[in-house]
Image (tube, rainbow, N blue to C red; front, side):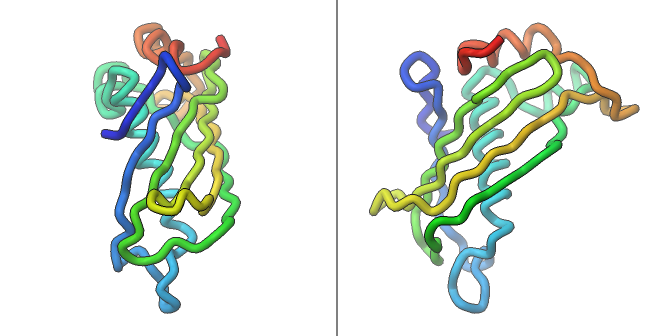
Length: 147
């Protein structure tokens, strides 16, 4: 898990090292891997907020489905680079969440990409929209200023 600070900046930092398998023929990280890194960072974020995503699925029967994902690429990441993904919960509603991501080279601080994902809370068995269970909503609330 990364360095997470709900009381200060409401962000969670995840650190990763680029694996060779994540690079393309030019030695640059393949673009889709940034979305994978965002997922890893969201997982760290949920753990820092006080729950495991799997527990939400198993105990409550709901999932946080990705409804939209965007990524703007600024500079290439390469094999063995250390990467920092700073995650923020920008919007929390009863049925939707919006995360933003700032992805940087850990050593140089260079901005590599910025991303955003929008999620809808849905029932696992029927994929219909649901409200976030109150316990989980309350755990996420300190991480955002929205309600």
